[in-house]
Image (cartoon, rainbow, N blue to C red; front, side, top):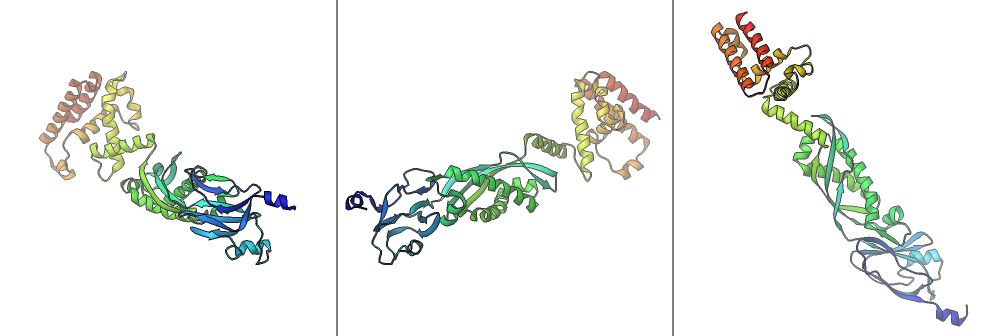
Length: 347
């Protein structure tokens, strides 16, 4: 190389990254045909790490501070280059800067419900949303596993990868925890703690530390939430005792009575769906007896005189007449049920 060509070569005296673009996690210093001057200065700011890469292999990693680039400060690179310790020539090497700042306020959510086993509902599909924060803690692992040799690697790109890890880990964590859905919804911190522990391990493989993870809401898909609401209403209105399913059935029948009045054919139009061989009159009679009449113990009922039985039937007839007057049942339904009750009274 002639002296003129040598003079024309550009040398880099100071390498630094100002992080003037938000959301960039890794940035390669633009070298082109430039060479780093022996004795040049590397400036690594707080919340940064610089990595020297020689022919695809990481040679040296520098933390925050000002570093003079010599054979003493680049021992691994010097060894890879097979330079004499007294070398005085410039050198070339790819230099990558990594931001180690905490990336805060990142949103996460389940694009599709996660199906998990549940001791209360057997199987449920759960939706969840929240916030998390993270930072790069191991630049070597981050470079080799994710960012690679690209000139710029952004926060949005890494979060595409993190979302897949988060969803897979969440499904595994919730499935193994056996925490019922109702407990998750009531104690979202419990759910967040369970998932965060597993996510921390998963993120560490990529040189990323999970700083914070919280759950803002846990919910069911709309159709499952509607079914849960109906079950809760049955427990409140139907007076479910030990036999929850019986109470739930009574509630469904009671709820169907007002709807039946508006159907063509009255209660008879939906009678086939109410019961396993039972007549419409029997369904109404049992429902009235369990939801509208006062509860009576088995022993008291066995010892009650005939007059008490008469009063019970009269009370049922009165309530049945009230339903007719309010337009909740048709005249035909009233007459049919009244006949059955009178038949029981007369024998």
